[in-house]
Image (tube, rainbow, N blue to C red; front, side):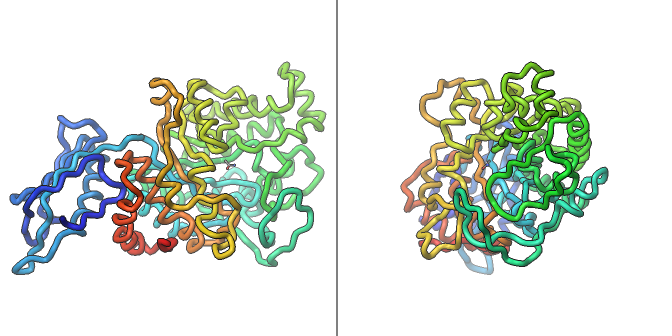
Length: 474
Ligand code: ACM
């Protein structure tokens, strides 16, 4: 049996007797887009006479190519400098349309070249979404021409807290080092183009109306206490400083979003919506007046109103709103895609409410959680999600009707970077857990974990070849 290691595993792979012996199988394979396959389907047939890759679309042909390159790693040297490729039949198509990874480039800015390598890793696993969490309390990372201080001021913090933040902590020590950086529009357009060439959509996130302290530090008039000059946040956790709900702030955000939409041509724009405390709205005369004008019974309802106002920019350009699962509770548009993060059960609720849902529950696919013993692992936010737990993840929760199940459009793993300062740390937390989530996103047959490890061991060399760090297998 040849040593075939394809990750994620194709839905159907049959190894036949024999092999194709030839000089350069990568060049000599025949590749065609055909009409008798679905858009997402591809086939690979290797016989003694040659290799044929056929697919229902250019995207599917790209997945065929990625799989074929991995198959070629199993080719063996033959006489006269030729190689023998094992005869196989592969029939494959992804189970889900959204197969994503989220990178938090706010808590720690990550260099463009590293983001490009992550795009390569996403492509290597036949995934198709890279979600960039571009803004948060601790840093604003996207150049906005109308408001240059967002990056000049909001892109930098004088220092970061040291160690693990605990609940209720009020005293901190700091590292005394400046942190920050941002992407120019050209940088982001380069990332978008590089990803597009590999069949990957970049989903930008502007997290609002909470998680906005960096923006408020740059433009205090966006906050609820404009006479207070805030700094970019230097500790982790959730900030009470959220956007105010004034008309001018709505207009400010709409201007920002128009520039963001201009950089990112993809169909989805993420507007956050998570962890938005309403304490300042309760205390603000202006917010209370707005609440009364709108006839809202609770300050928390201002979040839904605010999001709907700024999301008009998305409607104008026919883009689709994506939000964290808190959005379901804020009377958001029915066509919003909900990213379930607090639990799988939140995804179930969103699907039952009629939303399309991306499952990224923190109990299964939060790659900022520990993957081994906290005594010996690098400092992490908490939790415990070893590789095997990711591999065992069941994307579609039980208890949904068939129609509700069809609203689970995919899955995504999230890499929050509070405790990851740079590419090596991110690589260590991301890989190879990414390989495991890719299997679930693709819908690879769930085989015993050891079989997966058997394919993963040689696959690690491919990850290494991309220049990415990863956590060695136990
Ligand atoms: C989140 O983890 N706050 C979406």
